Each structure stands twice: as C-alpha cells, then as structure tokens.
Length: 206
Image (cartoon, rainbow, N blue to C red; front, side, top):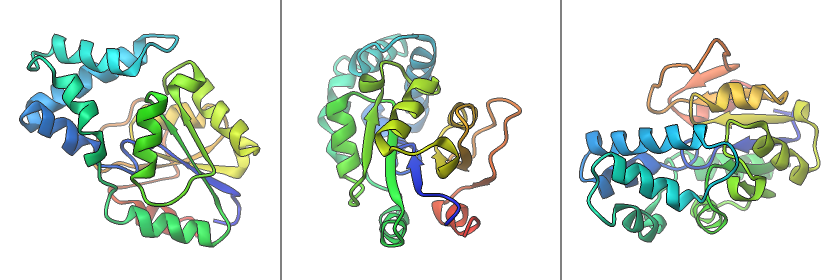
C-alpha cells in the first residue's frame, strides 16, 4: 500500500451495507432492488445535482413503493451497518499512516451521518451535494482529491458499484472493486482487483 498516500472509498456500498436497509424499508429484496435500480438510473442521468432525497422519493413513486418510503429510509439512516471487516481494516490503514476519504452519492447531512457509522475518522468526506454532481461524474472524485490535497496517482479508489470503476479510473486513480453483490461490469474498464470482501482487495496490494 505504500505506493499510495491515501485510500478513497465509495461509502454506501463499499463500506456500508446499504442494500439491507433499502430492502427492509421496501419490504423485501425484490422491491428494494427495483427501487434502488431506478434511483441509480435517476442519479446517473440527472446531470447537475438534484436533491438526493427528492431522487429517492421519485424512484420510490415510480417503482410502486408505499407512500412515505423515502421518508422512512432517511429516518432509519442510522441503522446502516458497516461491512464486518470494514472498521478494523480502515483502522489498520490509518494506523499505517494512510489518509482515508469517502466520495459518496448523497446529501451533506446523510453523507456525514453515514460516514460516522463506519467508526473510523476520515480525512475528507465529499458528497454529491458539495461536488454539484453525482458519481460517476469526474467532479465528485476530483473534489475529494482536492480535499485530500493529493494527485490521483497517489490515491487508491475502492469502488462499491460498477459505475465507480470507470468513473474513478477516468480521473487517473487506480481502482479496486468491492463487488459484494457480484454485479456485472459497467463497460470494458477493469479494476486492478475485484473481490466480494474488502480484506482481499487491500491485502492484495500490500
């Protein structure tokens, strides 16, 4: 890891199990997946930032969620849980002198709250609301690099979604993919490593 000075993470998929919360609010895995897929389509296609909570509500309405589903998701945001290996792994990186950052498709309040649930402090937390766009737009990654004060080639990005792989690589970062859900690649861009757990990704670059 010493070829890097920092590790930047996707927050809501790479570090936190947000899938479980969406599914719980939706009442099952299938409706939760439909809701979240539609939300992702809206974020990828909206261009300049639109309020996160509004996109979540729009996706809920379009996929037949019960009224108030988006409000319930925000109200239960504190139930988000880090993946089991995440806190100790990040603490180890910090102990080794690495800077840590997150770049997340979220509003400022929800992004800060979610980052606090990981249990390890971050040197930079940049949300789409601050950057003015949603990932995989370059502006989000670039804003996080600026907050770290580091060039792209000194920062490793840990993706949680398929779109993060070409998105982060496009600004010059090396990328590994924590593909917990075993998703298909977005395009021909390939990460340095891919695994369904965080530990093998970072150990493999040691």
